[in-house]
Image 1 (cartoon, rainbow, N blue to C red):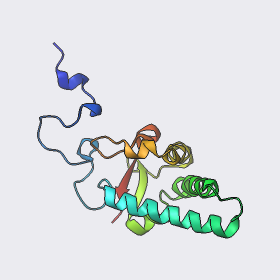
Image 2 (cartoon, rainbow, N blue to C red):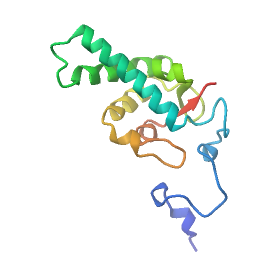
Image 3 (cartoon, rainbow, N blue to C red):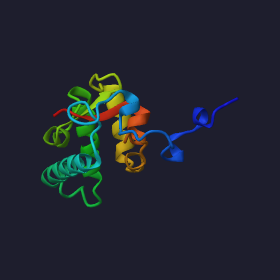
Image 4 (spheres, helix red, strand yellow):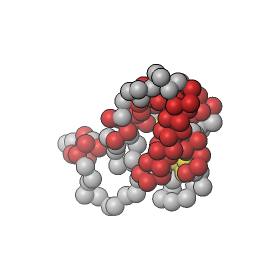
Length: 148
């Protein structure tokens, strides 16, 4: 006989089992370095990165950035290059976050491209599972964790 928990999904919401913290199922600690980066830090990091890209677009191409597309393109480029090379953007660095694979390695360029393209669509980051991994992280097989 199949137990309902065996075929359930994250779309069903929290289960009736013992209370878990984000990242517990993935072997991450509840707090401190290595734990899942929470929403507040993520929003601050995104705001810092967006403002940086907006300022660069206003400085480099003010006549082409009327609709914010240059800002979005710079955000995509920033995420691909820096997450691919170091695992974090300037906003992630300031807030103490890093994008890693599920086994704790830096994301790398291939995962950074997938993650960044989906991040720029905005919908994937706001739809997340109990481990607070957005659809962009799930598609790239990454997780955003605290470094300090």
